[in-house]
Length: 306
Image (cartoon, rainbow, N blue to C red; front, side, top):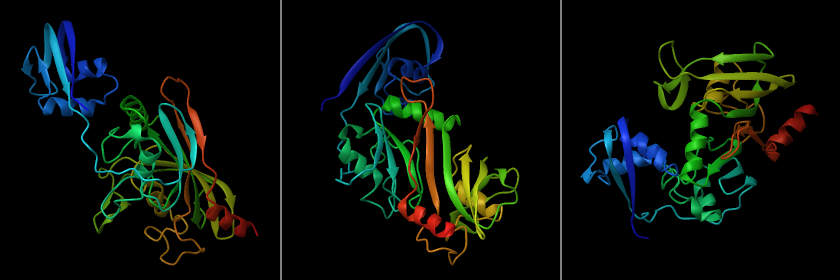
């Protein structure tokens, strides 16, 4: 591939930020990517390299953008079967199995969802970053269920904005040890890194951590367990697991936040991303996707129902 050069004329500008101007002119690129091009000296205003993303455009003139060729990614496509719930020209919706990491990280350099989707749809390469092609949001390694990936920068930007603005509908199924204080409830408790164990999250004192809100509703009760529908109003790391432990009903099988010796024959936490609702590119209304409960979790429920 060769580099591309694009030029855009601006007229009667009144101090508009350069990056804001480019977002309108180049909607297929995310703002962060455009800001990266500016920092790299690949954007000129009237022939002079721009110095910062917030540079103001005054009067009339031209902005030229040089887009470098895509660098070969070190992320290699892998032929890994995917349970695809929905796919079109903009997105792929997958039912992620437990045990699969979403994108490469320390100790997980192969076999991730990112490797798998790149093998299925090579056009995702570079979307949202070379190491995270198409990734809009994440699920824990041992959490199964619905996850959506974007096929273009424009779709990636649209979907990420819905998560950021709390417009995405995120509903989980969780089997917990014990019974919550009330059949329905709302946990509004900030979450941050546990100062005693940096690999864990913890509910923090007021004024610390990040806002985290979860709502739960009892679906089914058993003698020593409760099946809950949990809706995330924010999206913090390990939010459901930390919040459920905080109210005294940790997720069954969760060895990090719950019982060290699981109360049921589970090899992972009983947590499943059941439903995801988003407005897809070109659509005004939410489109909802559901993933059936993973077989090993369904078997646990069957045993409890006896």
